[in-house]
Image 1 (tube, rainbow, N blue to C red):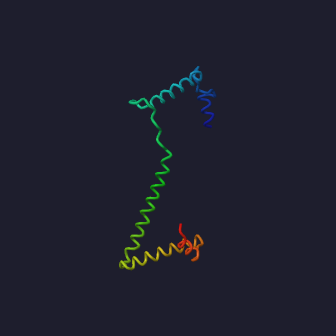
Image 2: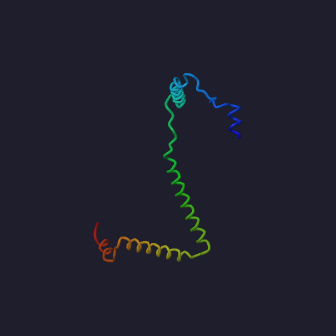
Image 3: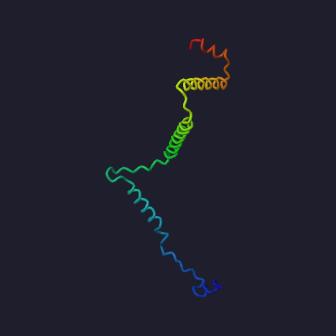
Length: 126
């Protein structure tokens, strides 16, 4: 119903027209605009071209920020979890020694060193 009304009112002829010679000068107009923007991209004082912003640096900054946030959250977690336990200085030293020993044991297990290999490494001159 609406379509018939529109056809009666406007007709089937396309009302949009391209101006004559438009596509003949289109290329030259586009090239003129590109050249004008190229001139605007130069520094006024030095006449040198301005450099584009370094987009490749953005992921590096995001990674650095993530590492910093992770480090801060781990330190905060450890400080809050240790707040409730007040250990004397002797216990802290003993705990640190046990942790170092356990790390060494884990590393020795990982590289599959036994006591004989460790003794050989410590006794040989490097």
